[in-house]
Length: 279
Image 1 (cartoon, rainbow, N blue to C red):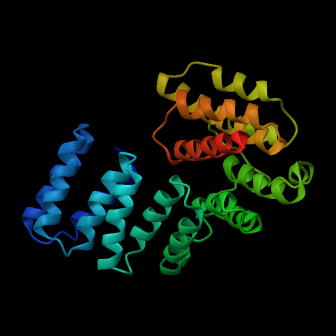
Image 2: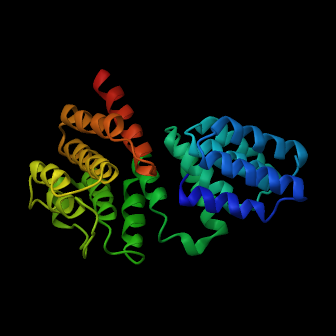
């Protein structure tokens, strides 16, 4: 279970009405941590039956659905949570992410916008809205979002790359390359090689070599190769080689699954390329 999921459920516990509901949600959290997914959902469902008008309880089950990749079910529960608590910012933010994973880009942006109306202090760091802008074809808005993120973290290669992708769609890869955001030092392997690639100072093989080099656990190597293939796919797509892009994105999505939001983005982009190549 991710740290974000655990924190989300712990937050919900503080709003549970009555000890029985709180206990059910604690048990659901424990079951999910042990991999007992059906039991976790059953317990969350029992909590909803015990307190059906509590938005936080619906939110709790939605977060469990989200963690299991059940996007439609998660959205249905977030819908209920928002109906019961229209000012529940977190539900809008999570629902926006689930909409993005389903390819509902306009709906995703609307949810992220509503979240940021309620939590304006989070706007500069909301890179997920930047990605939603990219897929919705709102490239200038995406560029501005990623530029704003620099005030939050100027060592994030992914932020610079997504800004590049937005700019390349409007003014071409050469212009985007010339105007790459300056990055300090992203310590994640192989991020600096990815940055060099998009900056025109490295080759695709350099990225893969860096991802495979050195001693690493299976989990670390899987993550490194995931990001290598994800960004090689995005690089080749921006350069116009859709088939090679699809090959890399398929490797990222199929062979190197990781428990991170960006894995879902790999699925989204892979599926979009498949549809494009079938036309």
